[in-house]
Image (cartoon, rainbow, N blue to C red; front, side):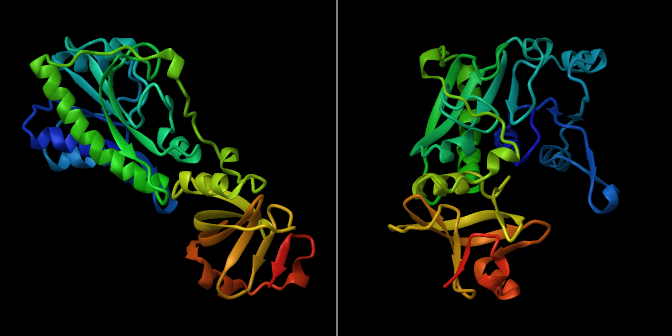
Length: 310
């Protein structure tokens, strides 16, 4: 059970290792593209169809017809990777249970956005966890875990890819362990719980009053998606890549400065962040030099904003 690319790696490794996949359960197709006239399939569905695997796409996981269809498969084990919350009638069905892959070292970063929050909060290590699904989300007994270091230059995108590959191997190892009955489930420690709540548009607004490391972590923790943003020239500007320079200054945090040619930087509490790639509202993603070449702003034209021409 899964939908995005993150789930494909786990499905692929099980299929390539000859585990009998009775069915693949994924999200219903969506309409998109030009004028919403293109039917879009999930990454998991595309892989399943390419390899002749049966696909189920229930709108409602409690639908009696779907539940009956699932029951008829008589699966020994269900595996969930990047899917929605399951009702008990579904996760409690297989005799060996239902396992989930989570992109953190549970009980740390329970929730919808563990990859983003681990970077935003400056963690040096994260990882993946397999666990049995229970009534409350991300609370079941832990089966296996694997640590993954977070590099100073990692973004949510690069860390996603590392965890996806590590997670796939952990799924394979977990399924083998359950089959051979050599894994002992371990209850999660409630004393060590931290949360990774869903990220919304307002969550992504940059607070330049924080120090350079905190703002740098925030930007890369939201890059490339959904993207940290700030107001610039009266519009939202997403910042995807930057580097930091600690330096004493007297400018108000959030003040932008530029030579109008090669750099655009913004003041933070203890220095500057130099923006490398960005995207203005309604425009394409750009590197900073061609962006500046295209706008050629002048300080006197923007007296209402905190912009300095250098």
